[in-house]
Length: 89
Image (cartoon, rainbow, N blue to C red; front, side, top):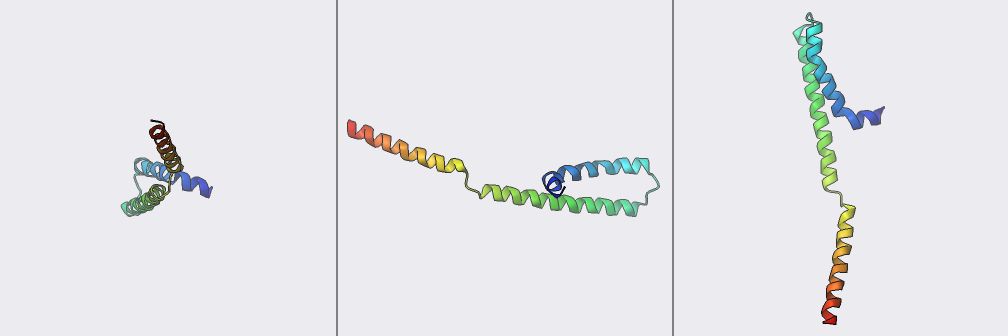
């Protein structure tokens, strides 16, 4: 369950935030203080979710791609081929 929340936390938060107006229309007697507290909690949870997503993005940007090693190897092969063409000419 914890892994599910970690993977889909932003989606869950969006569903809960979308249900707040429905809650207001279905239960008109809810005091505004309770709604203000709920909105503040949702904003705080949204901030936490944003920071979590930002940390994942930063980690992904600082991780070396496996394609970088392949590109470097291909550059070496290309250089060797050019050297062979030069020697043959």
